[in-house]
Length: 421
Ligand code: BGC
Image (cartoon, rainbow, N blue to C red; front, top):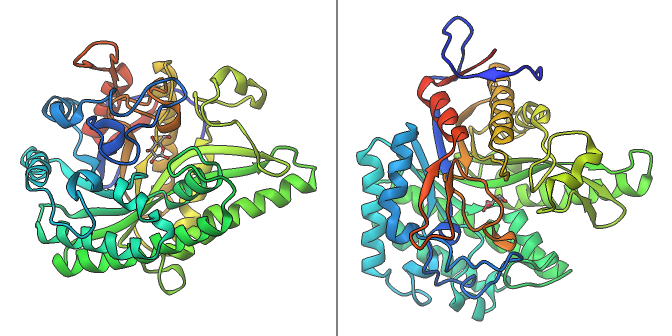
């Protein structure tokens, strides 16, 4: 792929079309956008002092947010069901009001021709599960299966389900680095158990959802990062890159896929956010959330979270396609930056790379940008701006305004095409 400038003014002669029916969407997750949080993140205070409870209003103002999707002309919305909100106690019936609201939301999407893609676990457990030992405890599998069974019985008009979002990130952040609840550090044994339990829970959940609806497409999402040695000549950096790849990629995929990897999901959700360099043991650069200016040493494009690597995107997709033989959906890709021009450029570069991969035979069915609007970026808080729409967090009703990169993305989605200028 060349670094040529891109534009979306549709010039049919040079337009690079995506396959017919390609899903164009945007994503959010319950804890990051809903507000009125009732899960284990409720009292968490991020580095910038913000909290998920006080900085989001999607639960009460979802209609306003869904209007953004229509204004942008997007055909898919990835959202989640908050387990804690829906199921107030282990094995209990689902809260009828909450279920009714989720149903109304999902029906509003389908009514507008927007495909709902629903995540069931996105980094947030109910507090009752944490108190009962969390995902370390084998009973978590039964609890989750019970939740999924009840959701399946509710017959929501959903075709695409994501059981777990980024189990490798969850295991790392919650049990090795300790930035996410339950804030364990270097707990390698527990981390392994959590992964094993979530992998089993995923397989069970898939069976439940498919028994409930044979048409259901059930997958999970995996965060893929390109890990590189910080000092290519240093054996320690290279060794650690291999260790990280084994834990973060191989073990996660083995736990979630069945039959040696080829089955286990109807689609693989690929979340792609670029690359990281590994120095010695445990030291990675850039550290998530560092200001972009600190990344100048790499001489590549960096947003306020990571070093970007659109050129590796096709390589990754081709490798995954060959290994797993299941369709893929890019369930997340996005950029944290207050420089909207940078967001637009990075978006174009990633979409051009994606087009290249599809052209080379990769079975990718959709692209879901992270995120529809600015939201609570976990340990970093609201100061990291990923949104296609900006949110003014200082105003009581937190108004949204679509950024120019958002309109640009909408134009690509409507045309189902992008082209180099
Ligand atoms: C997660 C999102 C998160 C995004 C940006 C992904 O790892 O699924 O919840 O906000 O990356 O960090």
